[in-house]
Image (tube, rainbow, N blue to C red):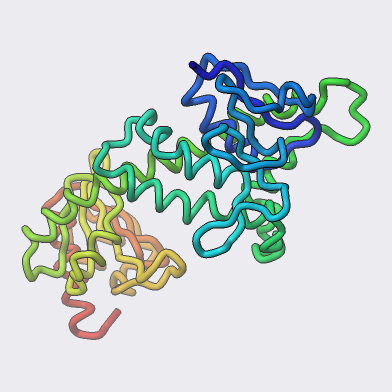
Length: 309
């Protein structure tokens, strides 16, 4: 029997059922999304998927709640929210519906779960406090989605439902953007790995376009590569390589003499005709041709080797 109804609770909403709705409405676009606590509506049936309400978790019966005691736990005993339960059961199908290549689905499913789903689960269950984000706590996705709830004195009897359905496409855009970016990252790996092989022992990696490259460098243990060059529009860029996603520190900085310079001043400092820009923080430089950017890259490497950066 086909799914005709997706049912979650009425009233105020949280990130977990909103994000669950993103997944389920992609998989079952013809189903009606209902928000209710009516016992008949939240009773399991073959044509319904019930989530974040109902007081039970039973994947075969298509009911995915986590509020009962004891609540459902991951293998590592961290708690699920409805989003985690829905992602565990329907996430792979969702990725396939998003045209993620079959050979990447398992890794992307796991990465998305770790980076995106688990934090929602933990926050929703009170296993971590929003304050762990410090002054950025108000800018976390659950907080931003929560800010879309109606104000307390909104007199409309449909205020909660109206706000939920207005928030749904916003939540969808975040989920789909991250999935697309993860899929692109996995697509880029084979391109970068080929470029690493072509570079050999050179400390300069040339890519055919801008793309994620750091994870491939780490996977290949290509620690000898110091800079990356690639075309960007009509120009070419020379990029430093961050040591990790948690820092701005790089394997090597561009020459200090280039910092903040543009056009003629940068041409004079670098001795390269066509040099156009170097960021003051020395993580990126731009030139107007491949030849010019490779000259700048060679100079940057020599500068590092002589200990001047």
